[in-house]
Image 1 (cartoon, rainbow, N blue to C red):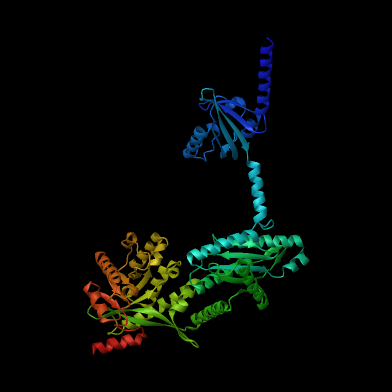
Image 2 (cartoon, helix red, strand yellow; image 1 turned 45 degrees about the horizontal axis):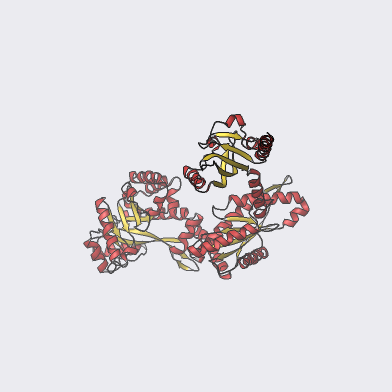
Length: 572
C-alpha cells in the first residue's frame, strides 16, 4: 500500500509539472495522429484569438493563412516523418482574420511500440519582433525626417548600380542636389519651416524620378540622385542626365508654402557619370560635390558636370538648342529633294529632306539637330514647316508640265503624328495650297507601331480617306510586326539603306531584301529601296522585283531647281 501511494503521489507530481510546463508563454497545441486538436493552452488562445472549446475537435487547418502552398506543408510533414520534428517560420491567421508571422515547432510523440500517439506544437507570435526589426532597419537605412534612403543605403544602391553597369555596359550618373541658402531659411523662418521645406523637396524629388532610380538625403540640405541604365554612349548618357536634371530643377523651383508665405527656392546640381568600377564610391561622390560647388559659383539653380569635356558638350548642346529655336523663328531651314525613280529610270517623285543653313556654322546635318528637336518637342514646329513647304512646292510643280506628275514624300516623327489635330493639319495644308492629296506621301517609321496600334491605324485610315499616300520607312530595322503590317493602310515599304549598302556582297542582306520585296508583292504594296549607289545594286534589286529606287545613283539631294532642271532637260 505504501508503494502504491508513493507511485500515485509521483504520478500526480509529474502531472503538475507537465501542466505547469504546458501553461507557459508559448502557445501549445496537442493533436491526435490524424491532426484533430485535443488540447491547447491559454497562450495559444491569446495568440490566435481562439478559445479552447472553439478548436478542440477541429484541425490546425483553420489557422492556415493561404500564403503557403501544398508543397510547403508536404515538405514539412516529410521532415516530421523522417526526423520526428520540424521547426521554422510560418504565416498563420488569427480568429479576426489578421495574418501574422509565427515561429512554429512540431514534435511527434511516440508510444512504446514506435507508433505516433500525438503531435505537440509550440508556437510563438513574431509580429512585434518583425515590427521591431523593420523599425531598426528603417532607422538604419532611412532618413527620419524625409523618409528617403540615407547615405548608408545610397552606398549600397550605388554598389549595385556599379555592378549593373559592369554587366550591361551602360553608363549611370550620380547627381548631388544642394538647396541654396538653406541656412537663411532656418535663421529667418525657423527650424520647423526648414524641416517642412526639406520634406516638400523630398516629396517632389520622389515624384520626379523614374522607377529604378534612387533619391537619398545625404546631408543637412543635400540630396543625391542615382540614375541607372542610361546609355552605352557617354554623350547620350550625359544628355539623358541633363534632361533628368532639367526636369528636377523645374519641379523643385516651384513655390513652397512655408510659414504662411510663399518661398522661392533655388538648387545647384553637380553630376558625374560612371561606368563599371573605374571610380570608387567616395571618388564619385567627391566628383559630384565638386561639380555641385561649381554650379553654385556659376550662379545657382544650375547643373554642372564634373568632366570638363562632358560639360563642354552639354553646353554646346544647350547652345544648339537655343540656336535651333532661332532657326525656326528666322526661317533658316530649307528643303532639298532627292529623286525617286521607277524601274525604267523615270523620275516619279522626290523625298523632301530638311537642311539647316546656320548663318555662322554653315550647313548642319539633320543627324545633329533632329534628335534634339525630337527630345525637346521642337520637332512638331519643324514638322509643320516641312509639311507647309512641301505642299507649297507641289503647288508650284503642278503648274509646270515637266514636274506636274511628281509626288513629294516627307518624314513624319512619332511626336508630330501623335499630336492632336495632325490629320486636320494635313487636310488644311492640302486645301490651302490646292494640291492633289495623292501627290503628298507621308513616311512613317516602324517605331511608331510600338504605341497604341489601334489609335495609329485609325489616324492612318483618316489620312488615307483624305487621299494622302502612306509609306513605312526604314522597313526591317524596327518593330516589323507582320500581325499589324497587314492592317496598315500603306502603299509602299521602304527598304532601309543599311540592307542595300552591302547588298552585292552580303548574303544576309540579299535574303532580307528578297523577303521584304516578296512580302510587299504579296500585300499588293510597292517596294522602294533607298541608298542605291551602284548599278550592281540596282540590277539585283530589279531582278528581285523592286519597282522604285532612291539614292546617289539617280541623284543627290539638292534644291528643287535641280530636279526641275533635270526633268526639263530630259524632256527636250
